[in-house]
Length: 362
Image 1 (cartoon, rainbow, N blue to C red):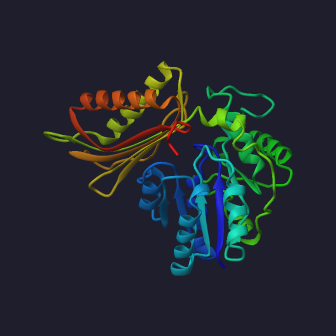
Image 2: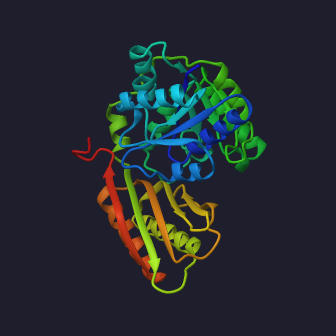
Image 3: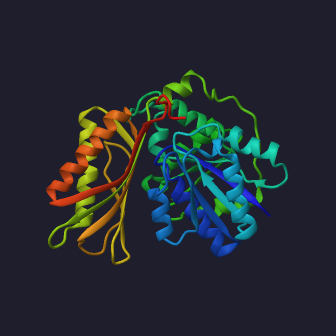
């Protein structure tokens, strides 16, 4: 059996955490599963690094959405299935992505018919982002154009997974579930906490025993609403190395202050950052990973360094509702100021920043 599943969902919904939780369950109980981390831009994704450090079999496929690199995707699937004998391979798409139902599933079915079993097209939903398209029409300081992406992603779903129920009361979870069942009448809806692995078994059992519907829908891909939403987003990736000339420094505090500086500068400019991820490896085998899901939210430490540092390799991935040039300036200023605060020398090995619809990007 060569089973493949696409996992969609907006920035910060928990796509990678959900895939890792599903892979862990399948590997422990029913077979073998692995994960492809897909994103725009260069390699060295925070999610892939952190998941690999946690023991997950994860591989990166970067540079462009899998929608536009079918041959690379097929080559990777064949290696993972034919040589590594995985029963299920899951790949996410970038958090701004829509259209993978057509560009990935239907294309695989047409051009590689019968080679891969297509598991249900799965969308991870974040309760906080859902509020913007529910009757309350909540304002979470993201551009209104983003609502197109929230709706279009749900429209493509065979399976919708309401994530982060550990943050919800039972009554609130049921309100979200009712909305999802009404909005996605043809989809199977689950409620999980990927972080705590609550109800992951139910999702795993379903996706391993059901196939994609391969439905045909018009989500307005490439149309005015799509372009308006994508124009609001920019990507930033950076790899750097910081060191102190004498003694040691608190790496957790440094990274936390860096995230806080980025948040403050974006908020001052009335911009937002749907997902910021910072990751650093310590020499003792521990790592620090910090996530920020918007300028109005608290940062989340997913893990911490175990001891003070003399030096530290750092990866930053930021996906922001901000112009690319302004985002690059903000990131540079935040890094410079925070490094000076800790008396650190910072060497940047790689950086890239681009708007989703910047001229010449594709």
